Image 1: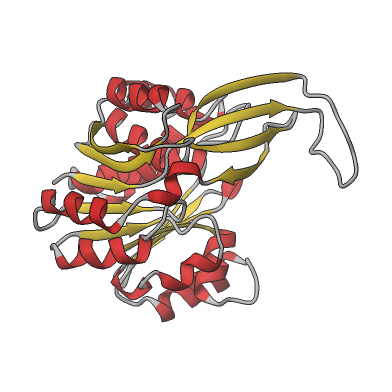
Image 2: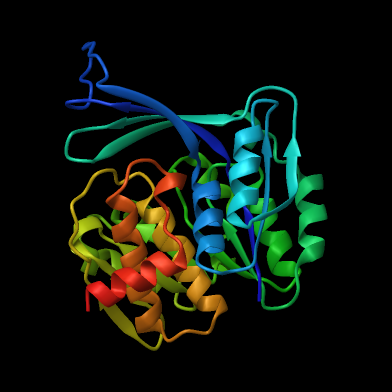
Length: 299
């Protein structure tokens, strides 16, 4: 079983700040760096570093060489990534002294993922493969339908929340990977309270499996047969940028390996803990060996 990730590729421009800039305020960064990121790229790298077979489909601009390089060196298949005229997608990220972040993304080449590219990509699908999506590229709704018609299981991380979500056929999704904000939005719940969000998601998508991540409050997994809670591993938080993406990649990797669900959640939580203890997005994502060592030390 392999994973096809039809997703975003961004250059992250990271500004470390004392506090998030306020309306009308000008502040000076304490440190600036550029790194590879984008939810799609981060999730592909997490999948590959966890030992899954993963193929990335997406687009970069002429400036996207380092994005392709980091995918390849991490073990991701990149035949489905096109180099297009113009600029790659990028993100402006503020990281405060507590390690929390906020992010603005600019689509760039991610907005030019065409139906023709998707049609070509889904030819690789074999029955039972997983196709992973976020909401940072063009034609996601079309791609979800194409993947399902090809016999794949569909996993969706519906981020960012915007008007494009309305074009995605949510009833075709097999795995939802959401935080409390995303869960509230797609469930129609009136609050971000986990129990209410979970109940709303169960009613709206009774045949789907759902992972609800809650930051320092851990995570929940539920489907029609079971409900499992996973606590976090406590570490010093340095940068939370790729924590959710790391969890997502390790979770789906566990599915491809037919691991028991409680083991999948434990491994994904450990990988996410390692990620938040390091700076950066892609650079913070651990290998499976690192996760195994972490789990031995934190039994």
